[in-house]
Length: 168
Length: 168
DNA sequence: GGTCATGGCGTTATCTTATTACATCGCCGG
DNA sequence: CCGGCGATGTAATAAGATAACGCCATGACC
Ligand SMILES: [Zn+2]
Ligand SMILES: [Zn+2]
Ligand SMILES: [Zn+2]
Ligand SMILES: [Zn+2]
Image 1 (cartoon, each protein chain N blue to C red):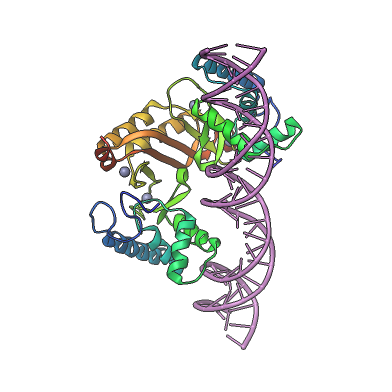
Image 2 (cartoon, chains in turn orange, brown, cyan, blue):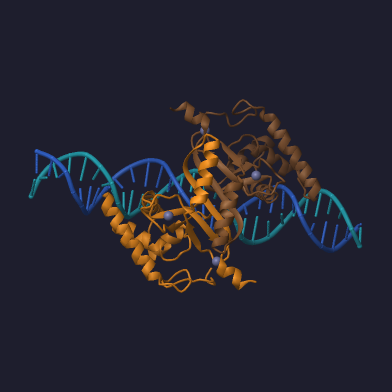
């Protein structure tokens, strides 16, 4: 749990990029988007969004809950986190990774997309992609079946480049 | 729960097809496949497979558990079902629908495929597809990212033809 | 400023889904 | 017969999610 290839807690985690910038950027875009839509990005919701963005790994609701409780200095109820997450998912700021029961910050909030992910089984990082070919293929086959799509889920499990290099 | 567009319990459910045949066929193929591989399709596992095949809707582990308990006339532990499901999934006889935490019989056991589904949010039926274009698109984009795929998950939520007709 | 409706949040309890740890049983080769 | 191994039984518990109820802050409206 703590012996992770990439750190999971602090900022500046992962592949040497400036993760603080990721977070700040995500929060800024969230502020803008919510302002534009008249949605209320309350302190709590903003806090949860920030915690979700603390790494590029999908995080479980209860993990976020722990972080939140710690930061607030008092115990918080699961529902608090779930409500915040529901808001964030509804507004496209966060995606839910179904195969992990976990949540991750959206890489392109505001844009119309459905969330496609490459999830590394070794390090736990998840990269969001939005490939038009996959979207098109799904659209085509759905049409062939007379199926009306509302929410496509694409989650590809496997091994990321970094982790392949580490175990040759 | 009981007011379902298609019945969920008895055989001969759904779109007027001979579902008893679906079940018999699935069991036969499972027998053959396991014999071929030297895998032990025990009475319990076969029973669970049959219960999974009782409809074309994904079923939760605890729902299967209830069925099993009822059929056996005695209470069964969750673990019993989970172990059977684990075996069935490992051997490709059953798929897990991640977005529903539920299980469904594989339409083409033995064939190499990963499981792609059109899941109707209205009636609950799930149709397994295996579209080469989706597979290809996923393969391509994964390669572009240097990502080594182990298990792609594609679950498309939406509305099936039947349900669209019923609510125009 | 006062009033009211709305929506966000806190509290508690409960439900569903899944796993861990350990004991037992039955088959099969030696 | 016996040891080994895979399958099953039993009990307890972890992890994920929701339901029911009520208080309080915000902001529109008078
Ligand atoms: Zn996104
Ligand atoms: Zn990795
Ligand atoms: Zn299949
Ligand atoms: Zn339907």
